[in-house]
Length: 488
Image (cartoon, rainbow, N blue to C red):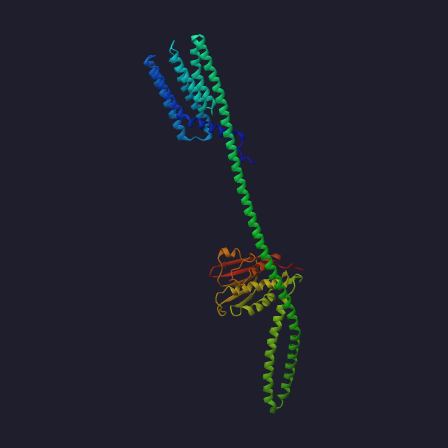
């Protein structure tokens, strides 16, 4: 056990001693009252056998000594001293006990009536009774009993022995033997009281230790339970995230396959449109030579315009398919140097299809170095940032709401991609948490809270970082900083 639960032996001894001293003072008032009552009885009985002046002087001094001891007792109770002051209060009580014993020793010798066995027996009986009472009341502190009994019995025994006859010698011997017996009783009682106090304090410390151990155990159980609940919750989230990731991967694979399937027939459509447009153009030039066929030429021109419009639309579909294939590639795609402007343009085109009704996207591509990375994953990160920026606007006003995407090179030669909006913005406590998995500021059902976390992971895996500045009600700026591709 630790020393905090069980104090070292000196500390325990000091507490036991303090308890012994407390026992002295707790029984003091009864002892003092007995002193005064017994002194008054002795004075009353001996008033005709002893000079009253001497008798009443003894009684007055006894009362004065008792008053002082009562005052000492009151001071102790009022003070309620700590354990460290116990020795001093024990010493004071012992001095008071010595004065009390001396007064009864003075009674045994100074109030002795020669040739009067009755008064002698009375004094001897009262002195012996006072010593017996002190053996009980002062047992918790043997020095106090020794001071009282010694100064009370020794003068009385000596005065009895002084007469020298067999009766008085026998009385002296009996009183001395009585004093020895009382000393043994007081010693034994004091030892038992000390052991009882020691055991009580040890038990209290043990109970305190058990209470602390119980509290610690409860805290550990509570903490462990909380950890297990958090682990279970994290596992549930992880399983849900894994399910979502698998579904997204399946969708990506499906999108890649679909893009491939669409791209092949689309190539035929574009090729045939180009062929038809070229042949119709030749036919138009041939027909223009004949003035009678000018109406037919006009019809051909309208057909050419329609075909050109169809080809423009098909070309847009082709670019969308190419972009879709770019962002649906598997993670195994090797890293290579990437030019940021074309990648951002593809991301913007895909984003505009989803956020056309919310905001428009403006681009300002400054000079930026090549970066090394996985084109599809980095494109996914930029697409997510652009979509987040568009979704930050509370009301759909594409004529007013603008998402600005720009690139530049910082002082250290790194590529800086900035996505800025003037939307709702975020409070500082939300900014600090936006990259946490499963944390989202969107309404329930509109996001799983993984988009920005995945962005952060993609950028960090390329040795870059994302800075965020946001002001509530004034918009947010995401700044992606990426190291340049090695030269050569």
